[in-house]
Length: 347
Image 1 (cartoon, rainbow, N blue to C red):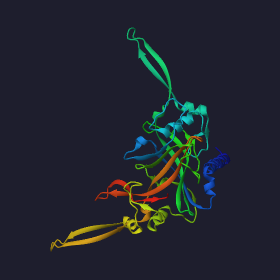
Image 2: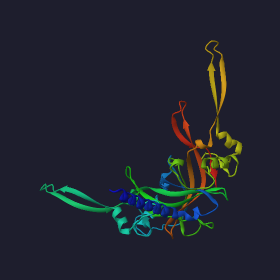
Image 3: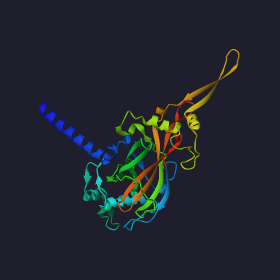
């Protein structure tokens, strides 16, 4: 390959990459152009939104079930949203794409091919021992979908001092080891200021948060950042300065409200170290104060309200609270588990 041809190909690839990035960013241009939005990041996470998921991994509290909008005979009454979104895709009612940024669309026929399978079944006639081969055609059952991969943006509104979220796209994930998203379905519907949960178009609602899969700061793709916005510092300031209501961690909605001093104490631990003089055997007690810095928090638990709009066949969400997560270790410094420090409420 000549140097000239290589440079041309490199130039064309850079143009293509730039174009794809621009298409992806276009999904939330209104937020990027909004002068009140000082910081925005894109991220993905997995969640089932199933009421059967209530366990140590995920909490889903149903707040509304207006009606069954499914037009099919098959309906699993524990996985309403999983069923509805998947069915709308295979029936061609929504736009589907190959990627979470919604840059490359997939036709309805391609979707049907993705969820179809062909099995070869071999049987033997017990009388003649003759081998018979039968071709069996089938398709992915909604029960085979275990969860969604959610592509969202989280952003900070400096006017309201609120963090907010918006769902951009979702992908059904099969209940198989190391399964990958089947396809991505466009959502990208902002929750309106006059949103009414009592509207007949809103057929399902739930408060949900993932306990097992907090959002990693390092996996967020920052798309907008004004004046060196510091996510960890802003969360810390909101809690310490009592800008929002701060709730303890007995469980979102079940905790007590905390005062700024109580929040500040959560960032400080007191250890008692006892030593002995080997000559006099005299006991010495030393009090050591350990201060945790805001930047040591690297994960968030997001508590969100989720709604399904029957008319548009889309999921929408609203951020209700953020919980910074802290690592808990044993006396030897070995990691044991993560726990939320407190909830910052945005309702």
